[in-house]
Length: 194
Ligand code: AMP
Figure 1 (cartoon, rainbow, N blue to C red):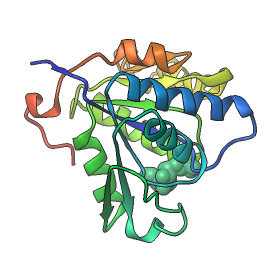
Figure 2: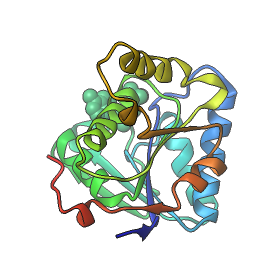
Figure 3: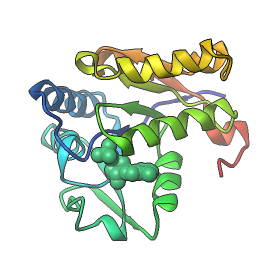
Figure 4: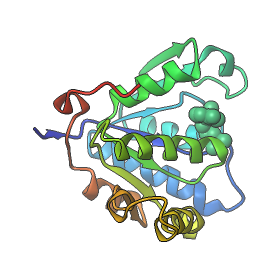
């Protein structure tokens, strides 16, 4: 069973990164989502690229669901401007809600938290817990080393070529949109991710 993509979870940095092009890409991503009528699901913070994406969606008249754990409300500066704000008890609950609410996952530049989120959603897909599109937006070569690490795992016999194909790498948000048009829902697979 296939469904249209109505909401995309974006994983990205809670910091801005050093290159202005990262912020530009985050802005472009937010605008692209809003114009396509797709809801943004994200970590709920106002800081860094996360804040930039959410702000861009709101500015362009789109809808945003922020999902933030209680203990990060201050550290990641909870974004009060979003259309829907969900405060969770734990990181696990945050991830589960973000997973359930999203039809596809996009990854923009970020740090350790972003890597963790990407690898987790990718391994869930590898374990056939879902079949939703996962797209890495490779802004200015930011993702090259991430992709190299995944390729190396395949070359060294620790992952299958098929598993590597579960992540799509694109240069920008417009291309990410093209790859995410149709998703198979986790419900359709009848599985529970955790
Ligand atoms: P970062 O890329 O480190 O700036 O983190 C981006 C987002 O990932 C932030 O919303 C963090 O709260 C979140 N994050 C940080 N560490 C983890 C983790 N271990 N698991 C899941 N998310 C995380």
